[in-house]
Length: 347
Image (tube, rainbow, N blue to C red; front, side):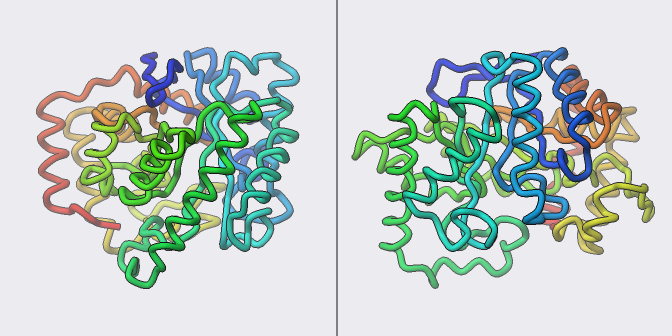
């Protein structure tokens, strides 16, 4: 397992991060513990969760259950200091969250304290803002994103308030470092500017969706990541398992995510099918396991801090973690590039 710097800190995190959003809904607690045991045995030292999890589906009744699964594992295994733990505070749009009506200083601090209780720990290594307090182009909102409808000063004031609250949590020792998620280049630049001007914590990562079929990050965000040492933690490297091939030819495996979310949050559509088939064909031509090709591609990107994988079975987890040993040849990368040029934005 390779380990990469977490921003400009002295922390090194595994190039594969264990995602947890299925635990407590699609996976039982014991299954979550089995996944953590296996991942750690393979060299994974980085877990990512959120107060919102599990999310397939999102239900108020299960809010925080994934963090509880992790907290119970820490309590049983005594491995808290061996793990770099990332969690997230959620904001507007989810009424059952503390900040469901919009982020506030008090709400952010209270949400963190509740996460600490569920996680059975005194500190979170990386505390991330799950999504902005303003509009965003993430999760298929690319087509309707309208920044001109936002009040610029309010957006800046919100970012200052959020970073100020995170700074207080760092000062209190409850959070070591801070990060962003579902953020834009402009938003990230505002956080960096404020950190420098006001001596506040510098964001170390951006957790955004990135995979063969969603490469918006390759443009301005990649440039920012490289020059500012704010690496990407990519989620959904398999495009919600589409790139594993499990849904090929209309297949619908029992218990799979598509049985709960038919279009996989807007990913599985007629528009995306030609690109999906083309990438699966690249893997077939080169004798690669599709999931491992897709994950290995993400790992290879120069701006990538860690690639977040998620699985509903240990068999899937073993396959995904094994991607760390897959090196993509120039021929494979050329075929990927050709496919990307043909279908640059299929979702």
